[in-house]
Length: 456
Image (tube, rainbow, N blue to C red):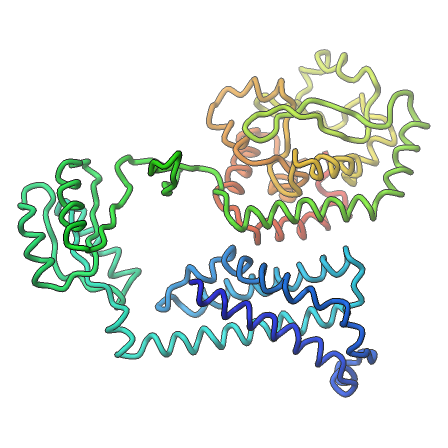
C-alpha cells in the first residue's frame, strides 16, 4: 500500500502542476471562456505541492481506495477514487480561500478531473499487470483452514466469494478432533504460505498449539477474532502497554477520516465565524433590543460520552422560559425524554424567525471551534433529558461528538415526533459514518436552512 500511496502522491502533485500550466495557456483558457492568467500567479502557491503530496494519499485511504483489491469491481474502485479526488479538490479550494491564494477555481476543477483520470489509469495498469498469469502465481496465497467443519465451510465460502483467484485453499484441519501432526504434514507437503484459524468455539489450547507449530515453521498464522457473537460492535486489534488487545467498537474508530473530520471542523468553523461575524453581531444586537435579557443563551448539554459542556445559542425565548417549562409539560409533542412544542408560547417574535432559518444555532460554531461539537453529528440534548433515557441503547448516540446538523435535521425534524425515530436516524449516521456522508449532509442542509423547512 505504501508504494501505491507514494505513486499517487507523485501523480497528484504532477496533476496539480499540469492543471496550473494548462490554466496559464491563453488558448486553453479561451476554449473554456476563461480569462487569461499568468503562470506567475501561482509562484507563491508552490507550498501546496507539499500539502497535496502529504494529504492526497490520506484522503484516498479515508475513502477506501487502497482497500479495494485487484479483483474488486471497477465500479467500486471508480466510486472510491471519484470521492477521493472530489474531496481533494474541495480541500484545495478551502485552503486557497482561507490563505487568500490567487488560484482560480477552474484550476481545482482541472486538477480533480486530471487527477482522477491519471490515478485511475495507474490502477488499471497495475490491475492488468497483477492479473497476468505470472503475477497471479507470485501473489497467490496458499492457505490451510483450521476450525470446526462448519467454520471451515464458512471460511471456504467467504474466500471463494471475496478473494477469488488470489487465494488457494490447499488443506483443512478440524480443530475439534484432528491431531496437530496433520498440520505439520500439510505445511511440509503443500508449500503453505498462511494458516487461517477460526476459534469461534474457543478451543484455546488447540489454537495455541496450532500457532506454535506455525511459529516454528515460519508460517504466518491468522486468527479470526470472532469468539463472541456481538451484534453491532466491530472487533479490531490494538496494543495497550505492550500487550495485544482486541477492541470491540460500535462507534467510528480513530482513522485518517476522523483526523480529516477534525480539520474540517476547525477550519470550517473558523471560516464561517469570520464570514458571519458581522451578521452574528447584528443578530445579537436585534435580540438584545427586542426583548429583555442577554443576547446569548447558555445551557448544559451532553457531549461525547455524555460529558457536559456549555452550548451557545442566540436567545429565542424569554428569560423565564425554564420556569414555565413544567407548566407546558402536558403540551409536549415529542415522545420520550425530549421536550418539544410547535407553537411554543415562550418564543419571542424575533426568536421564531431565528428558529425558522436556524440562525439561532450560529453561535454553536464557537462550540465546534473549541472541539466540543462537530459540524455534523447527533444534536446535543440537555443534560437532564439525557438522564431520563429509559432505553440504554439510546446512549450510543453519545459515542460521537454532537453536531450542528445531522440526518434528523435534513429529513424534517418538525415532522418527527417519536424520539425512537430520532435516535434511529442518529444511530444510522453513526453506523454508516464516513467523511463523504458528512459532506453530503452539509450540502443537503443548505436548502433546509435557506427554505426554513427544518424549523422546530
